[in-house]
Image 1: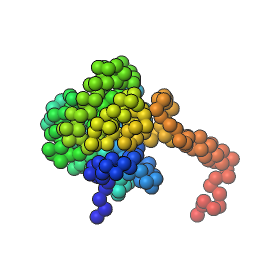
Image 2: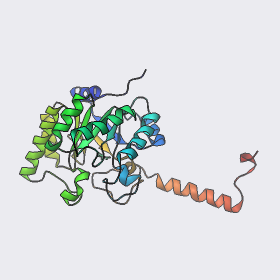
Image 3: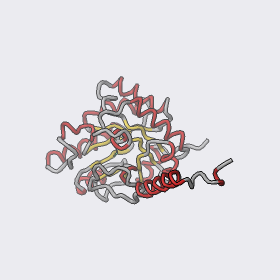
Image 4: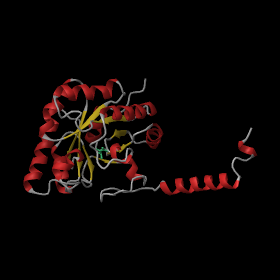
Length: 266
Ligand code: KIV
């Protein structure tokens, strides 16, 4: 039996000063490609609400829809750690609701950890999850489920007070038992300070170069989401163009009668 990369392996990477690369994936073919690339941690993010479902923000995606996607990703992979992201209102109501939904990721969908957004407000949930043997990736800074409170996707921790709160949140989440913390859209210096003060790894997205690892949304990396591109995104390739030109060629060949040819016929 092959064991997937685990929370223990991720913490060990920080100890041995190896950087951690995380990417999102939401379905079977892309999860297979990610595993083939050697990236060891796949986050089935609630970003799928925007990049796959076409919603304006991450709030609409449901727990059942997330389970459907996590199942595809675990089916496609053997080694990668698969983290199921807790969607909006799947954990905020009560500890019981949180445990029931997080448990579904491990029990029904084969994930080996979960992620949830929030600082001090979710510390009791993190403690309960850890007690129930569910590894937790925490997420602070720009937390997209709080878009209405934040008034948009804005860099967080710019004032002394908010930076102190984020620093404090990170310490409390570590004490509660989270195995790593995503730091999203915060100043590099603050991310550096948090990273140096924690035993567990920080995974940055728009948090500068000093985090222990990085995470990006797959569809941003490969040019499949262009509705808006935040400054922290690096588009490494654009697969939309070759796909469009292949489809144009197919259409042309069907219209002119050159496809299917003898070669593709029985
Ligand atoms: O939903 C997501 O993909 C995320 C990452 C961007 C961290 O939360």
